[in-house]
Structure formats: structure tokens, C-alpha cells
Image (cartoon, rainbow, N blue to C red; front, side, top):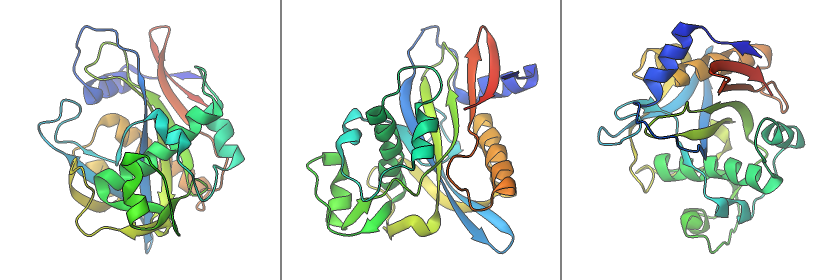
Amino acid sequence: MEAMTKADVGRIDKGLAAHDGRALRPRDAATLILIDRKGDDVLVLMGRRHAGHAFMPGKYVFPGGRTDPADSRVPTATPLHREEETKLLAGPGRTSAARARAVALSAIRETYEEAGLLIGRKAAFATDKRDWQGFVEHGVQPALDVLRFIARAITPPNRVRRFDTRFFSAWRHDVAVELPGGGPTNELEQLVWLPLAKAREADIPDITRMILDELEQRLARDPLLRPGGPVPFYRLVSNRFTRELL
């Protein structure tokens, strides 16, 4: 575990949300970083949040959002890799296998809802879960084996919103269906594929910039993003912001 500098703390504090004075318990959330390669460049998919949002208005972000516990009961074409599940179960809190599965599936669901991208395998799919009917209609079975756990971050206390966010990645070729009109929620606008260097220059939260740095370093060590890689975890411990590896 290593303590972060005051400059790092200030950037994260500014980028996440304004002080609110309430002590909120962080809610499970998931984000998906879709990756593509173009020549020597690594590209990531980002979208701009609407200015009216209370959390990070106007910022460019990856698709993502809160986890619905019901996501754990959605059938999948493939399970999480065991190494990825082990990393998800690590760290503080009582994370069960069902909870880890729900978090991972919520990253796939949110990517469909916000970006219109359905990740999985083309095949008949059935579920009575309302938020997954797009997968039913387009014949896509969500697949968990394509996900890689990249990072985890817990929003500091006394913010407008608090999340325990797991950042996943997947490759663009893991998208089974791409809807031309985007996702049904319209939460993100101006979806763009940006090289990592350009993504850092966009109006993004500082925690997002730090996650991009982590992703670039991991890709440098392992261009294929094999399962079980180190997962940095950002959180407040004894009034110090820390980074540790899961």
C-alpha cells in the first residue's frame, strides 16, 4: 500500500463530486473501458455526460453506472475467468461470488444502455429481467469471460454521490451488436473513440485519467490483457488516500 500525494488527493477530490456534508455508504457500480487498436494507437470509447447530471456533469466518461443486485441472476454464455473473480472477491467488504457476478454484469448492461453496444455471443437469449430485454430482442447472450478487472476506486466520504466502482475492460471485437442510434437511456452523448493521449486531454474526471494511466501501464506489460493481472485499488484509509494492489 502506498499513500498518495496531496496533489493526487486534491485532483481526485475535485474530480469526483462536490462536498455535501452527509456520510453516505458507497454503492456498487461498474464501468467498462472498451479498447480498440488502430495501428500503434490504443483507442478507448468515451461519451460526454449531460450537463444536467448531478454527478460529473459535462465530463467525458466510460459507460457505467450502479449495479442492480438482480443482474446476478441473468444467465450468461460464459462465466468470469477464475482469476478475475478472485480479484473481485479480494479487498474490504463482504463480496460474494453472486455480488461479484452482478457487478461484472452491470458493466455489460450499462454499456448497452448508454452506448448501444451489446457484449457477448450471438445466440438466442431469454430472461424476464426488464433491463436485459435488449439482449433478448437482438439475440445476444452476455459473456463474462471477455472482461478484465482493471481497477477499483471508492469515492471519498461527504460527496454528493459515493460509489465503490470496479473498472473493467473488453475489446471492441467482443461487441456482438452495435446499435446505430446508441443506447436507450441517452445518458451519454458524443460517443467517440479516442487514442489514449487524446483521452487524457479531454474534459475527464481526474480519477478517470489515473485509470487510463493504469490501463496503459498494464497494456505495456501485457498487450493481450490476460486474466489475473494486478488491480490497483484507490480508497481512503485512516484519513489517507492510498493505492494498493489486489
